[in-house]
Length: 219
Image 1 (tube, one colour):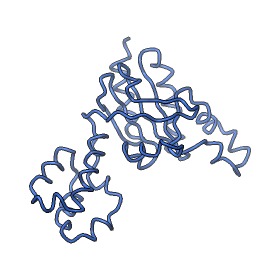
Image 2 (tube, rainbow, N blue to C red):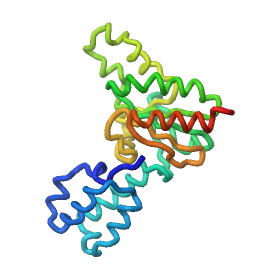
Image 3 (cartoon, rainbow, N blue to C red):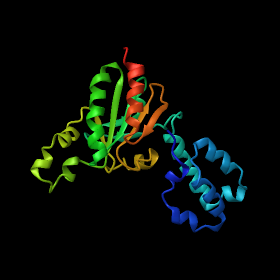
Image 4 (cartoon, rainbow, N blue to C red):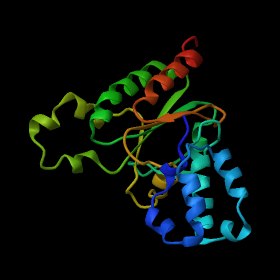
């Protein structure tokens, strides 16, 4: 699973407003590229373009692309969970960790019970889940009907057995950009030695499941 270069550009107007960047912007936004591809292509341009406004932004975006791409190791981070405890990626060293960015949407309703099943099946064998969501789900449910609040899909989101981080809590906002939480649900499986094995939306679930079945199923 790779992220197209265009996917990580969040301010197209900024790029297009700088004439010296137009050619490189077009080149990079119209290819389905890996971190290595983009870095090599950028190196072909002049130092003036590389050091331009666009080039500086692209350098930052390359770091994000590298941070989320399969085959690379995400950078260390520390966030605060919903209970006020500090949580670092390195806390999960030696275990499989599934980063799970979720919110109220059909995709989350579909994948959430499946993630819960995987956790229950493989937690004792070395699987951890680190959940990220915008804020306390109960806030989002204010004004919803009691029937909806009692829906088993909603209740499943309220009873996660793993650590949950609210991205809107103070000091946690950086993680949305660093791990490019561009939507929900996003699944990102990291190996015991810290390498990203799979990443994507709901379609990534089957790959995550197959990897865990293969590596933890016989333990």
